[in-house]
Length: 212
Image 1 (cartoon, rainbow, N blue to C red):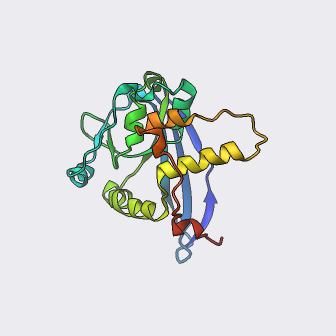
Image 2: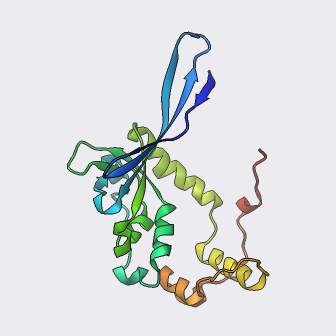
Image 3: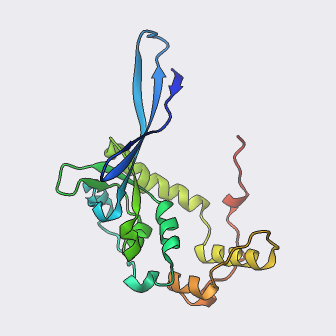
């Protein structure tokens, strides 16, 4: 098979949401008279205040032994509206359509989203959804394969914060930006500021690279 054409994103505005659909057309060289369209991604934006969802039944099954706490609503107090918007813009929620009361089914937990949506300003913003036609194929990848790969490349979050703060303080920068204080980050992370420190171990995965 070969890729014939790639369609530019098509934006379709509606009152409640904005759709962006990416299509790719694949031609079977053994059947030159036949060209079939395969939808490889579907992106939709909806207002957070109108986003109604539940977890997919398979996702619920895989999560039945897990517990996590988001903290109180005042956790986000140190953040201003622009920060909330930036954090929400960076998230893409994997969902499928549901025939139930809630129109969407979330395919994996996104704790940062669950936390951000509690901020009053977030209700005025859009959330980006990635629609999956085959959730039973996507969920094992998102819930099991993805976390396994993430563990391979992850670094300790608190150590990472310490490394970046140290770089911000010691490296001359041409950029006029204001960095959050260590005490603010500690409050957001719900830890003592002393916990944000540089560890001596560096994950081997950081030394790996991909040759493109």
